[in-house]
Length: 139
Image (cartoon, rainbow, N blue to C red; front, side, top):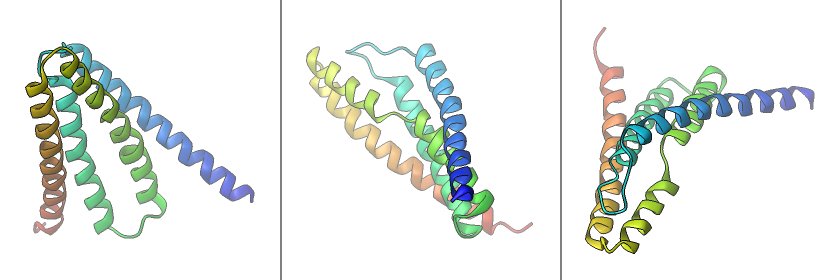
């Protein structure tokens, strides 16, 4: 089906474009706030919490506007899958925990893991609530 091939190519392009932007932002944050094995991974914490919030806002906002089709799907692919997917980083989060443990900072690793998961959940919930409140606000 030629039409579905073209749609797939557009979808891949949207994810790639969003991913390039998200990766660039993550790189800038991580470069500005480098991590050592025994220090708190501030850069990763920031990008993961911000990404969780943005994803919550985006998905709630899109869901309230209708089915995942057309421009809503394109925005979800560009900003949700692409940008937020590349901005946030589970692999770096996991690596930083392992590195902290290897350097004898197990309490830091445990607190970082717990705080990151809790903060991500709170940020995503705050994003959902924010988008819901904006949608309900009188014009």
